[in-house]
Amino acid sequence: MPWVVRALIGAAAGACGLLAVRAAVLAHGDVPPARTLGEVLLAWPLEAHVVLPLVAAAVLYRWAVVRVARAHPGTPVPRWREWSWYAGLAVLFVALASPIAAYDTTLFSVHMVQHLLLTLAAPPLLALAAPITLVLRVASPQTRRGVILPVLHSRPVRLLSFPVLSWLLFAGVMWASHFSPLFDASLESEPIHVFEHALYLGAGLLFWWPVVGADPSPWRLPHPARVGYLFLGMPQSSFLGLAIFSAPAPLYAHYETLERRWGPTPLADQQLAGGIMWAFGDVVFLIAMVLAVAVWLRAEEVEGRRADSRLDREIARAEREAARAEGKAAQL
Image (cartoon, rainbow, N blue to C red; front, side, top):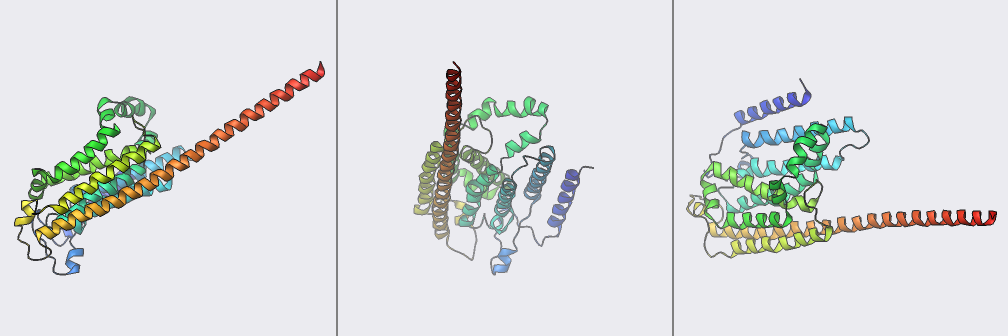
């Protein structure tokens, strides 16, 4: 039995055992206790539909890395890309299986942290790991030509990966989800809550794909456009946080009617959530823009060295031709 299969089976068994022995399972929408810091830190709602996919994603990525290293020892997957993948999965685990997930339907501010992790923290880390490139390298030539490349160049992928559309989808998901019945419905229904998380993660991945540029894409953003793309993303995130912060009354009936005897009032909690989105979003976008500019400058430097090298080769070739011409003239 291949080691990857054994690892997946072992991980599944371990996760199921962990689910079976944990102290308590918090029902969706219940108010968990928060009497002590210990109770908060021990509230880990480990659920199979969250834990198992994350474990499988980590194991499969590692299997692909090992396979690429064996097939191409001279060009293995960079170690930092592998750790970027694990870091992205760790962020997803914190967002969906830590005390953050235990209190997301109890405190809007905690729910906001969860959503920001799903949209602004995990997606760029996963994109930096270049998973599409890894799949292309580990796949057989037949699978690459017959399945993967046709999918990448298909009309739906070309449409969804178009930077203007991906930017609009990201902004639309953020605004529509917070100012529509979807948000309240997700707080009352577990399936809708899972759908909302998938929507945030998917929109985040589409948004960060053209910015990171580590994987092949039907559309390639030049470096100045990446900076502009991020620059335009920051104000819409700030304005959304400001709109939530400035709302004169609680926006969601779930939080307003929840029987909670501890913590801030629903309005104060909502203002904290808006402030978190405002501050965290600005910080993430500023860091991303600084990094995008640094990558742009480095690319310009590399291109400059290449241009200098080409010019040096052309000068050397011209000098050789001139010396050859002078030699022929001297012989005559």
